[in-house]
Amino acid sequence: MTKLTHSVLPLSIPEKKSKDIDIRTYLNKILSGKWKLHPIQRDDKTWTDELYHMAIDSLFKNLLISNIVISLHSSTEGYILDGGHRTRALMNFVDNKFGLRVGDGRTVFWDELCESDQEIFYDKQISVVVYEKLTPREEEDIFFRLNLGLNLSIGDYINAYNTIPLCALAKELGLQYAEDLKLNFNKVIVKENIFADSSTVLMMLLENFQTGTLVRGEKPTITKRDEIQRMCEGFRDVEFDADDMRKKIQKLMKIVTPRKIDKKWLCVVLPSVQAIMLADPECDPEDVRNFLFEVHTTQSSIFYERWFEISREMISNPSQPSFCEERAKMFLEWRDA
Image (cartoon, rainbow, N blue to C red; front, side, top):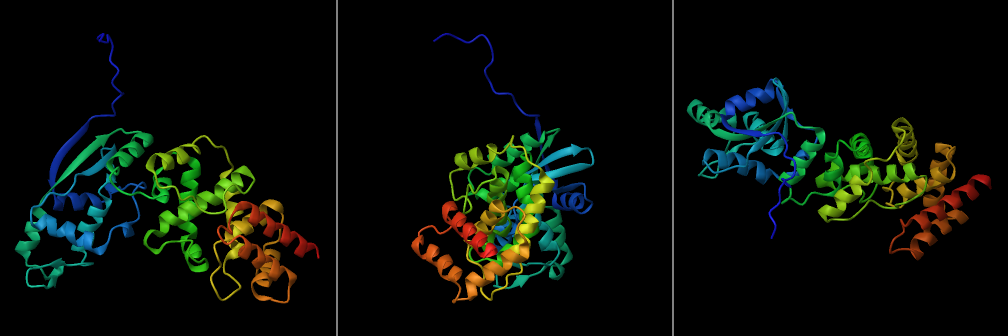
């Protein structure tokens, strides 16, 4: 083998500094606003109550908990890249939102602890790793590497890619419309991961509007980390008008919410309405709402039978783009009748 004459090592990010600080100091930085949760952080509902209890129990028993990773943007402003759930556990415990399980089976809340036990808790040390002058893409890279062992969903990745404009917009609109999607659609949003799921749905809708065609009729379901990252990275340089996208999503949500029928919409309604909007960009939202009402409630209507005939014939995947486009054609016939 021939020895290389130059370095081939990858470029390193800025050096990190590790230190132990007591919980009182750490919480003071959080409460004063000097250190904040980074927008990259996942929804707090991705941790169960048991995990929050376990984090506090581990601290009292001097058991190891993972490092908390901070990205310093200035001497007075830092963001938590990793450790959001542990930070919430500390804050919620001292705020009496859950208690400490003690040996006799009781649960003791913060205000019930004697002062000496409270001081013991405040004096506990936690390990903090601090980076300075990271770029946004370096922050993303660190977040993904620290979470390699976790089963991050597509929505978690979309929400973490703050440097990809389409992902950032999907996250913004996902937060805005999460409750509407949950309340009005059946099985579109999973209760345990509502904000990640809503971002995935919005990414599907944004991709369709951006391309001007119904690329997807349902949210992506890929699970492999490298495939998810390739999908997101594929949107990095995509150009689009963010304000125009917001208006289109607003119009779509105006059509489907609040729903005019008693039951929640089936999943096929969302891409079918989008197919209508793509077929007729100037469609009147009230016309589409009336059409949806008729095809779901008026059995004497020929469109009622045809709508459900498509769903019955294509039951394996009624949200397939070509079937949604057939429903869009039905709307155009209904409108012109």
